[in-house]
Image (cartoon, rainbow, N blue to C red; front, side):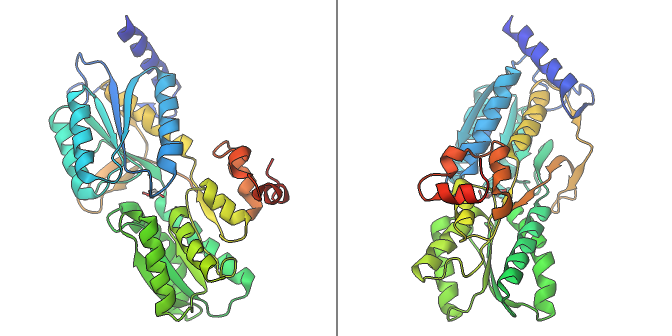
Length: 364
Ligand code: BGC
């Protein structure tokens, strides 16, 4: 009986979903056969960004519950062998579709191909697994994310009136394809300025595993090696940005040197309100989770949908059916939009000293 209800829920979702259903390829991986649809999700860690546990988990759960589909969500906590173990357990536990946020393409690829060999359909969630064979890739336009960061930093440097600023870049993990895309976005804005000598290129460093503590150490070294001559920092997400801001605080430089971010975390938004962070990038993770859940449910039921878009995997040249959402730049003037969208609450953002800053920024 329960199976009937699930089938109805899934059909309802197909009918109302924003993606077009494109037939039942029951011979493909993940067709499920007689298996009851069950979706497994592996999140990467909970330290590189607040988003995974506070936003992605919550919105994915909401989407699966609404659809009445069985699911399990686990977090690999940055451990690649744990990631593989979780995947194996999900497959033996009857998952008919697997959604992963890889820790690097090599290990991600192994998980995807093992799943496929067991008839389990797969989705790359947020991060594309290079050379992988996931049925879908659901993310944001990550080059656009980087462009917003570059443009945001230029705007802040212009407002501060810094002539020929030295700009440091603190990039995300070298094994995260998104970090590569963010960098190509912000370098498309900054490199022409370095080339024309309007700006001076400072240290350009990647942070392994997006490790926030390591980011602090790296930036401390950057500051020392340049004799303190850094005028702006392109930090690839709010966690890295906050590590930079902590170092700047210790040197009484916070607020004087613009720092970027990404993810619109509570901490990032508070740093913006305090004037210590120039901007962040808000990605509506609710939409990302819903789009991915919709595809995962279709796959778990042995169906395919036409996403109307593909992304070329630079390693294999494969055109991966994709959903790419649009990011939005956030500075002090529109922090309130993130609250209005329900991504963070006024209660968590406007605590203590931030209450007055929230009022001044029109957060209600
Ligand atoms: C995500 C970012 C996140 C970073 C660190 C990236 O792949 O797109 O939103 O901040 O990983 O977890």
